[in-house]
Length: 157
Image (cartoon, rainbow, N blue to C red; front, side, top):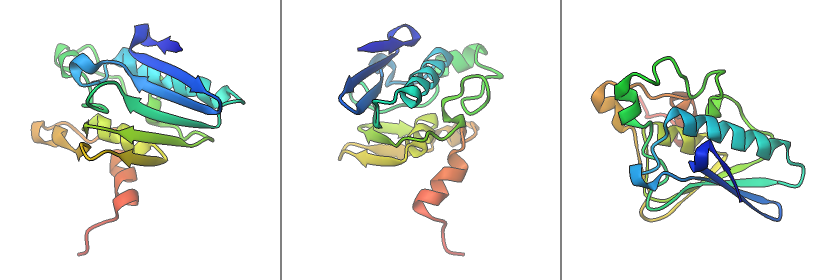
């Protein structure tokens, strides 16, 4: 097993399958900047590994990802960092290999953006997808507003 971001991201490999896990169950796998940069590094290494053919992306415990770490956001420490930007934003690029999101529990706000970034999603019966951040004036980040309608379609006029 490899780890990134001081253990906040765990990566295991079983043959051609790489599993990338957000390891912050105590905060429902909410991502602080260090975690997002760790995801970028983990998926960059997956992309470079010629033996790895597919990645499974999941969260440890009962949830996939509850979005951005609101404690960090409220401190102002993450202002100016873009999950989708050039500063190791994980959703800023498409990979040449497939990523399958294994969604259990909440995939909300920026967690939804991570889920729709995946090429395919497999959802358990407990999966909850949502844009909860809009209730508090937060934007739907990371390309989600483009990717989500491509997946589910647009409402009829």
